[in-house]
Image (cartoon, rainbow, N blue to C red):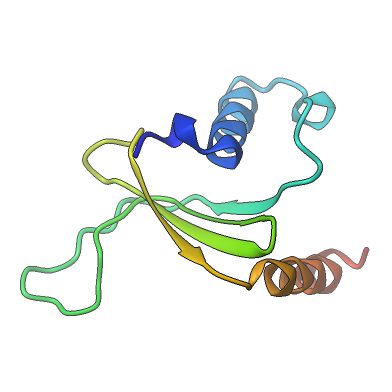
Length: 107
């Protein structure tokens, strides 16, 4: 599906575009009720015949309500994403991200 259909993917795209233009990303408006993290990656193309590997570019992981979602950006078309819902893991995801931020930044 196009990334524009997912609010947090659209928000992350705006932040990446602003950062590329060296704009002030810290003053950008966002949706504080949505927790997400996007990991930029060089494209990965799974070797032919591989099992359990999927070609992708960036990852995005986010919470929406009680659920967590994992998205993989298409290598062929960067505007297309495959998003999978993980029912009931939204709170867990938010706690894990809080722990990660505290451990890596000291906040």
